[in-house]
Length: 286
Image 1 (cartoon, one colour):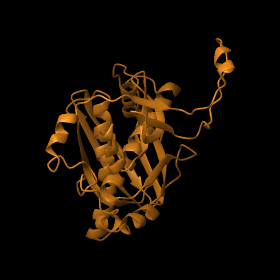
Image 2 (image 1 turned 180 degrees about the vertical axis):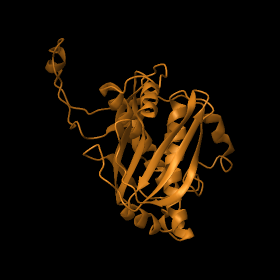
Image 3 (image 1 turned 60 degrees about the vertical axis):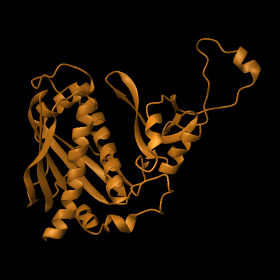
Image 4 (image 1 turned 135 degrees about the vertical axis):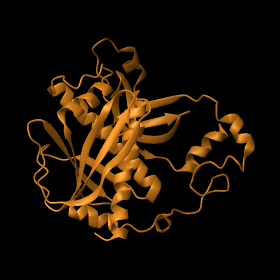
């Protein structure tokens, strides 16, 4: 692959590297360092896991089209699962079905961060979803690399990445970021769409103000008699389907949407959509 094309593919891989670092730090890992141990290279061997490894296939859609596979030893996967579940790390632990599900959820959080990073860097929305069947077929002729992750929390861990030819072709075809740029922001915003603190120095005084954040699964109108009739065991049906994203409201205003996740025993929201910067800046009018 030509150097320019290789750089385009590497840019996508680097989004994964950044995502791993961010999610691991959010789970309590310290001094996290992610680096590519091996450069991108054509790889003709099949990406099929053996009894000691696990491979997860991601279908990439929307702005990009293709397939990516993340493969690692089960001893690596179990430690990521334990981190997600706030358990003591034991690479020798059995890779149970519970750990398998937790590892899949860990990778979903990574994929959500990859999509966020890619949109911030390229102005392009992409979707990464775990594809069925979970065990991927061979991917002859893919591009591959090895991500090494170090932390004070665990010994160095390695994950193998595979990108199929259609995805590589789509990455090469991505236009430069300036061609994806949105309309010029309002004067209160910087060129990257974020609040321009230097242009509005007094704004820094407000950034530590606490606002109430609420996750909304849905809503409905109720008659007063229905409210008085509530009792333990009653079911209140909402106007939202289970596969629709939950909404993040800040000071009563819709700021983001995403998928509800569990992190360290607490509910959280993996953000998939964020309101435009000027809409978030409207919170200053409160």
